[in-house]
Image: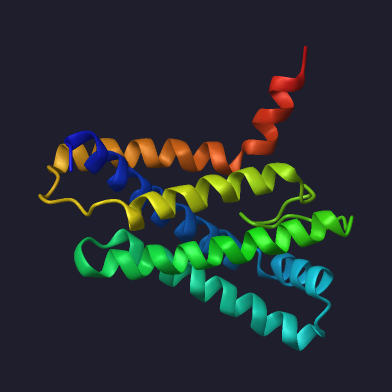
Length: 174
Protein backbone atom coordinates (compact mmCIF):
# COMPACT_ATOMS: atom_id res chain seq x y z
CA UNK A 1 0.00 0.00 0.00
CA UNK A 2 1.40 3.37 -0.92
CA UNK A 3 1.53 6.12 1.63
CA UNK A 4 -1.15 8.10 -0.22
CA UNK A 5 -3.66 5.24 -0.30
CA UNK A 6 -2.96 4.51 3.36
CA UNK A 7 -3.74 8.13 4.25
CA UNK A 8 -6.88 8.12 2.10
CA UNK A 9 -8.03 4.91 3.75
CA UNK A 10 -7.48 6.32 7.23
CA UNK A 11 -9.24 9.57 6.30
CA UNK A 12 -12.23 7.53 5.11
CA UNK A 13 -12.29 5.61 8.41
CA UNK A 14 -12.12 8.80 10.45
CA UNK A 15 -14.82 10.44 8.30
CA UNK A 16 -17.12 7.46 8.86
CA UNK A 17 -16.40 7.49 12.59
CA UNK A 18 -17.06 11.18 13.21
CA UNK A 19 -20.08 11.27 10.88
CA UNK A 20 -21.80 8.43 12.73
CA UNK A 21 -20.85 9.74 16.18
CA UNK A 22 -22.11 13.20 15.23
CA UNK A 23 -25.32 11.80 13.75
CA UNK A 24 -26.04 9.65 16.81
CA UNK A 25 -25.41 12.57 19.17
CA UNK A 26 -27.57 14.96 17.13
CA UNK A 27 -30.44 12.45 16.95
CA UNK A 28 -30.16 11.87 20.69
CA UNK A 29 -30.47 15.60 21.43
CA UNK A 30 -33.49 15.92 19.13
CA UNK A 31 -34.94 12.48 19.80
CA UNK A 32 -38.61 13.51 19.49
CA UNK A 33 -38.04 15.02 16.04
CA UNK A 34 -36.21 11.92 14.85
CA UNK A 35 -38.91 9.68 16.32
CA UNK A 36 -41.51 11.71 14.39
CA UNK A 37 -39.52 11.25 11.17
CA UNK A 38 -39.51 7.48 11.74
CA UNK A 39 -43.28 7.54 12.35
CA UNK A 40 -43.92 9.55 9.16
CA UNK A 41 -41.53 7.54 7.03
CA UNK A 42 -42.20 3.98 8.12
CA UNK A 43 -45.72 4.27 9.49
CA UNK A 44 -45.06 2.52 12.77
CA UNK A 45 -47.17 3.17 15.86
CA UNK A 46 -45.59 5.61 18.34
CA UNK A 47 -44.15 2.88 20.59
CA UNK A 48 -42.63 1.13 17.55
CA UNK A 49 -41.15 4.36 16.25
CA UNK A 50 -39.62 5.08 19.63
CA UNK A 51 -37.85 1.72 19.75
CA UNK A 52 -36.84 1.87 16.08
CA UNK A 53 -35.37 5.37 16.56
CA UNK A 54 -33.48 4.15 19.62
CA UNK A 55 -32.08 1.15 17.72
CA UNK A 56 -30.91 3.41 14.87
CA UNK A 57 -29.19 5.78 17.32
CA UNK A 58 -27.49 2.91 19.17
CA UNK A 59 -26.38 1.30 15.90
CA UNK A 60 -24.95 4.61 14.67
CA UNK A 61 -23.15 5.18 17.96
CA UNK A 62 -21.71 1.67 17.86
CA UNK A 63 -20.60 2.07 14.23
CA UNK A 64 -18.97 5.40 15.03
CA UNK A 65 -17.28 4.16 18.17
CA UNK A 66 -15.89 0.99 16.59
CA UNK A 67 -14.81 2.89 13.47
CA UNK A 68 -12.89 5.35 15.61
CA UNK A 69 -10.76 2.56 17.04
CA UNK A 70 -7.68 1.32 15.26
CA UNK A 71 -6.77 -2.28 14.71
CA UNK A 72 -9.21 -5.17 14.61
CA UNK A 73 -12.22 -3.17 15.86
CA UNK A 74 -12.27 -0.66 13.01
CA UNK A 75 -13.30 -3.15 10.33
CA UNK A 76 -16.53 -4.32 12.06
CA UNK A 77 -17.37 -0.68 12.80
CA UNK A 78 -16.97 0.41 9.20
CA UNK A 79 -18.85 -2.71 8.07
CA UNK A 80 -21.77 -1.74 10.30
CA UNK A 81 -21.53 1.81 8.97
CA UNK A 82 -21.69 0.48 5.39
CA UNK A 83 -24.75 -1.61 6.24
CA UNK A 84 -26.47 1.40 7.84
CA UNK A 85 -25.52 3.62 4.92
CA UNK A 86 -27.07 1.20 2.44
CA UNK A 87 -30.17 0.92 4.62
CA UNK A 88 -30.53 4.72 4.83
CA UNK A 89 -29.96 5.05 1.07
CA UNK A 90 -32.76 2.57 0.45
CA UNK A 91 -35.05 4.49 2.79
CA UNK A 92 -34.30 7.85 1.14
CA UNK A 93 -34.67 6.40 -2.37
CA UNK A 94 -38.00 4.82 -1.43
CA UNK A 95 -39.33 8.09 0.01
CA UNK A 96 -38.22 10.01 -3.09
CA UNK A 97 -39.70 7.48 -5.53
CA UNK A 98 -42.99 7.52 -3.60
CA UNK A 99 -42.96 11.33 -3.67
CA UNK A 100 -43.23 11.56 0.10
CA UNK A 101 -42.07 14.79 1.69
CA UNK A 102 -40.37 13.61 4.87
CA UNK A 103 -38.27 15.92 7.02
CA UNK A 104 -34.64 14.94 7.12
CA UNK A 105 -33.51 14.78 10.72
CA UNK A 106 -30.34 12.91 9.82
CA UNK A 107 -28.15 15.28 11.82
CA UNK A 108 -30.59 16.63 14.38
CA UNK A 109 -33.72 18.75 14.09
CA UNK A 110 -34.17 20.24 10.64
CA UNK A 111 -36.93 21.63 8.46
CA UNK A 112 -35.19 20.33 5.32
CA UNK A 113 -37.01 17.65 3.39
CA UNK A 114 -35.38 14.56 1.93
CA UNK A 115 -33.91 15.31 -1.48
CA UNK A 116 -31.58 13.77 -4.07
CA UNK A 117 -28.72 15.51 -2.22
CA UNK A 118 -29.27 13.04 0.61
CA UNK A 119 -28.59 10.26 -1.89
CA UNK A 120 -25.38 12.04 -2.91
CA UNK A 121 -24.27 12.28 0.73
CA UNK A 122 -25.08 8.61 1.30
CA UNK A 123 -23.18 7.73 -1.87
CA UNK A 124 -20.10 9.51 -0.55
CA UNK A 125 -20.47 7.73 2.78
CA UNK A 126 -20.88 4.35 1.09
CA UNK A 127 -17.81 5.04 -1.05
CA UNK A 128 -15.75 5.97 2.01
CA UNK A 129 -16.80 2.77 3.79
CA UNK A 130 -16.08 0.66 0.73
CA UNK A 131 -12.69 2.26 0.14
CA UNK A 132 -11.65 1.47 3.68
CA UNK A 133 -13.08 -2.07 3.71
CA UNK A 134 -12.00 -3.24 0.28
CA UNK A 135 -8.67 -1.45 0.17
CA UNK A 136 -5.53 -2.77 1.75
CA UNK A 137 -5.26 -2.18 5.50
CA UNK A 138 -2.45 0.14 6.62
CA UNK A 139 0.77 -1.82 6.99
CA UNK A 140 2.24 0.58 9.49
CA UNK A 141 0.93 3.02 12.03
CA UNK A 142 0.41 6.66 11.19
CA UNK A 143 2.21 9.35 13.16
CA UNK A 144 0.26 11.44 15.63
CA UNK A 145 0.74 14.60 13.58
CA UNK A 146 -0.49 12.89 10.42
CA UNK A 147 -3.46 11.48 12.34
CA UNK A 148 -4.49 14.98 13.46
CA UNK A 149 -4.22 16.25 9.89
CA UNK A 150 -6.33 13.36 8.62
CA UNK A 151 -8.85 14.01 11.37
CA UNK A 152 -9.02 17.65 10.28
CA UNK A 153 -9.68 16.57 6.68
CA UNK A 154 -12.35 14.12 7.86
CA UNK A 155 -13.97 16.91 9.91
CA UNK A 156 -14.07 19.17 6.85
CA UNK A 157 -15.72 16.32 4.91
CA UNK A 158 -18.24 15.96 7.75
CA UNK A 159 -19.06 19.68 7.68
CA UNK A 160 -19.59 19.57 3.92
CA UNK A 161 -21.77 16.45 4.26
CA UNK A 162 -23.94 17.91 7.02
CA UNK A 163 -24.36 21.25 5.21
CA UNK A 164 -24.66 19.88 1.67
CA UNK A 165 -28.13 21.35 1.06
CA UNK A 166 -27.07 24.79 2.24
CA UNK A 167 -23.92 24.69 0.11
CA UNK A 168 -25.94 23.63 -2.94
CA UNK A 169 -28.36 26.51 -2.28
CA UNK A 170 -25.54 29.04 -2.14
CA UNK A 171 -23.99 27.70 -5.34
CA UNK A 172 -27.33 28.04 -7.20
CA UNK A 173 -27.54 31.75 -6.39
CA UNK A 174 -26.40 34.05 -9.16
